[in-house]
Length: 339
Image (cartoon, rainbow, N blue to C red; front, side, top):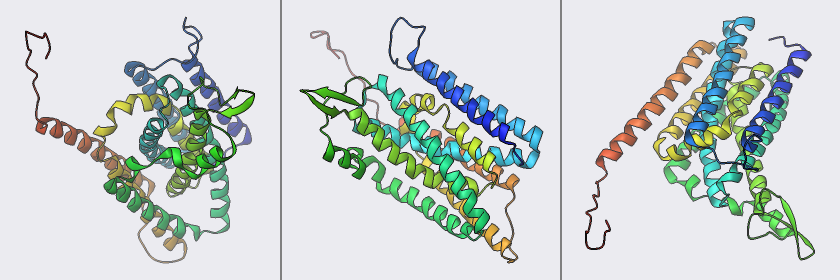
């Protein structure tokens, strides 16, 4: 796509406006209660659907103005990045638990995490586009990296490494603790406070540091994946941006369903391996080797199919586990009026 500078500016401006509105949703300026409020499941569901709807409408706009190929690339990239984002939410969920972040302040943490992710991915997109233009053989490296990532996702899932991870003891967090004293409790959403004449950092700052490091890791995983589907920087950026927008609402919607997405890691692993193979085949083709190439239409079909099978399989397993789980029926004791 030949995207003019004004369209880039308008797109980035629109993203900023959406983020400002998103922040206003949390603060509820029309509410009698000041400060951040907790999301209910119903409210989170409506906003999650709204953001996904915006992404779909934008995709149809790309399809209409730039053609079916560009539209398919956007949707394949969006679905892949959204899938990765859902897996990332599981890590955010563990991080929030590790730091015991009060629920009403989790909005701010997630918003900062989204902003950091957008900035980091923007930098990686620019760097990735430059590397691809200068050295097409990088597809071999990206492809091998994605195949290894797919293997690592399943390995960590089987071992339970994600669940056992202690995000309060990461190197970046330990570095902050080394130079500044940390308060035992949260002081609202403040990052620093002055106690007994000395400046202290709060656990909120440690959470921000930890989520920034996680965002960096996620960016390293996600950018090669989407470059395996399209090399158009505008499509790469918008697919990433729309996948990240509404992530806070989706977090609160999925927080109670994390255990039901049993096969999400397997689905993401399959997608990573598929895109990795696609990139290697593309690199071989570019170097004159006669190999079949995987078109964007087939890519979109495979990615959607994998995610559909993953979600349906997870829900069926969850239902089966509930049926197998022994039902403990409490009998009421009339003498104590207890169950």
